[in-house]
Image 1 (cartoon, rainbow, N blue to C red):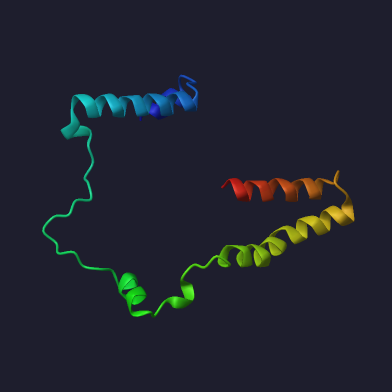
Image 2 (image 1 turned 135 degrees about the horizontal axis):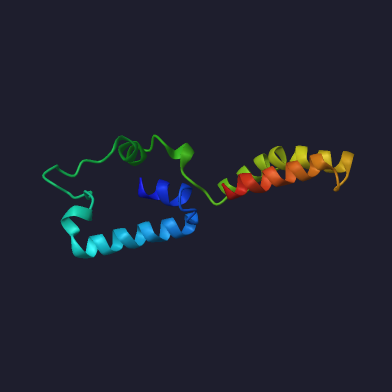
Length: 114
């Protein structure tokens, strides 16, 4: 609620709100750790049981999905042309100054960023 009021009513910049929230959490964890600390992923009393996927790897049932040195290059060789092919085709047909080329390039960059 405080962040909502700060950003809409007081026009506080969002990065400052994030920094202040982080600072409040850090100070709160130092001064009252029982109140600010979250639950952890401790061992507990549960015996160490392997997951289904780990057991399948041990039995050799998933050898077809084990990474190899050629997996990433092969994936890039297949999907990079599928991804960038239409953008390059639009660039070749309409030219680099076309709004369609710029939109395709923009969304390709956004896909990489996100």
